[in-house]
Length: 117
Image 1 (cartoon, rainbow, N blue to C red):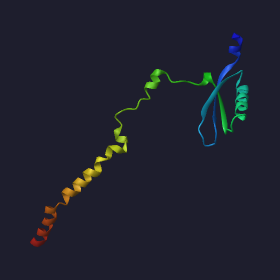
Image 2 (image 1 turned 60 degrees about the vertical axis):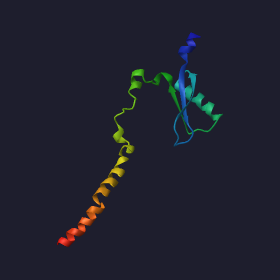
Image 3 (image 1 turned 90 degrees about the vertical axis):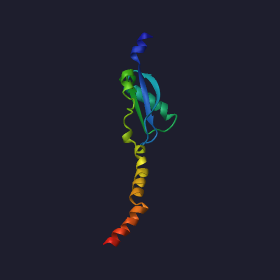
Image 4 (image 1 turned 30 degrees about the horizontal axis):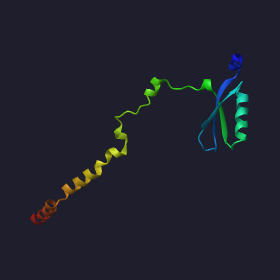
């Protein structure tokens, strides 16, 4: 039995339903090599549903992130300037500026300037 474990390798099977679709993990299987793993994956899918593509990857070739590397995926909190919601106050500020510029006293003062000339 211990010889079987070394002879068979674990493979992960991915597939996509359409050419523009995304690859999705389907299942794992044991096979002695890549070629037989691909044949086994195709046989499994031919009985179930049509697919556009199948990928077979040896599990030992798949690399996971370490816990330290996962820590680098945290979003930094000092990036608010990249979000459009950070500039929502500008419309209100611009309206306030325009109203201060064209208030009634200022418009009436224009008439006084014309009379003086």
